[in-house]
Amino acid sequence: MHDHVKEYYGRHLQRTADLRTTACCDASQTPDWLKPLLARIHPEVTARYYGCGLVCPPLLAGCRVLDLGCGAGRDLYALAQLVGEGGQVVGVDMTEEQLAVAERHRDYQRQAFGFSRDNVELRLGYIERLDELGLAEASFDVVVSNCVVNLSPDKDAVLRAVLRLLKPGGELYFSDVYADRRVPSAVRDDPVLYGECLGGALYWNDFLQLARRQGFADPRLVEDRPIAVTDPALAARTQGIGFYSATYRLFKLEGLEPACEDYGQAVVYRGDIVGHEQCFILDKHHRMDAGRVFPVCGNTWRMLQETRLRPHFDFIGDFSRHYGVFAGCGGGLPFTAGNPETAAACC
Image (cartoon, rainbow, N blue to C red; front, top):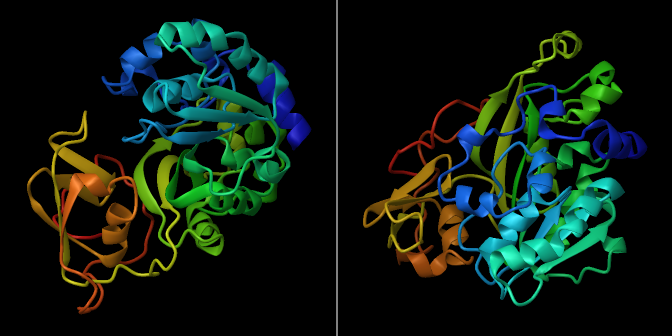
C-alpha cells in the first residue's frame, strides 16, 4: 500500500476538495484562536490539507514537536507558530510531492511568522520506520499526527517508535479515522477506500488494545464526529460500516492503571492557560472549570501532575488510600456526538 498511498497523495489528490468523504475538517469547524495562525500560511500549503481533526494541544511554547505524516505542512506551520522561535517542529512524510510543497515555502513562513531563525525541519521517511531517521530517543515533548496512522500497514511499529521518541510525561496527540467494527478485507484492500483513509481504519476497540500493548495504558478520547462517505459508489463499497474521526491523547507515563481507580483525589484548574481561561478540557470526560474542585482518578491525577500541565493545577490528596473504581466507568462504543461532558467526576 505504500506505493499506492504515495501515488494517491502525491498525484491524484491536488487539493482538499478532491477527497470523497467528509473526513477533512472545513473552515466552519476551525476555532477562532487558530484562524489567525492559518491566515499566515501560504495558500498552496492550506489547499493541500487532508487532515481530519485538530492536532494543536495547548501549552506548546518552547516544545519540540514531531508531526507524523506532515504532508504539505499546514499543521506543521501552525505548530511552528505555537512552539515559537525557541521551539522546533520536525515533520516526517513519505510523499516527495507533498514534502516539496512544505519545503518550497519554508523561508516564506519564517518571514511571515517574524522569526529570525527557521524552527522547522523536514524528513523524508516512513512513520513506521522512524528508527531510520536518526531521531534521538526521548527527544520530543509532543508527537502529533492528522489522519495518517490509518494509512500505515504497521500501526504497532508507529506507536512503539512514538513511545521511544517521547520524553517521560510527553504525549501523542493525534486525530485519525476509526470504524465501528473490524473492516473486512474487501474494504481494506480497496485502493481508493484505503487512500481515502477508510480501508486502513482500525476498529476502535482494536486501537485501544494496540495502544495499551505498546505502552500507552490509558488512551483518552478528546473529541469525535461521524464521517459521511459522500461518493455514492464508494459508500456502496463500505458495506454499512460506520466511520468516525476521533482525536486521542496518549501520555508516556509508566505504571498507569488499566481502570479508573478512586483514591479520593481532586484537582483545581487555575484558569491561567491562554485561550482556556474559563475551563480546561483534558478529554471528553474531563472538562474542568477554573477554580472548581474536580474529583479525578489516579491516572488523571498523574496526567496532570507529571506532564507539562502541572503548573496550571492545584492538587488535593495522594495515593495513600484506595476507594475502588469510579462508579459509571465501563465499556461500550465511545464515540458520541456533541461536546465534552461536564460531569464533575472521572469518566
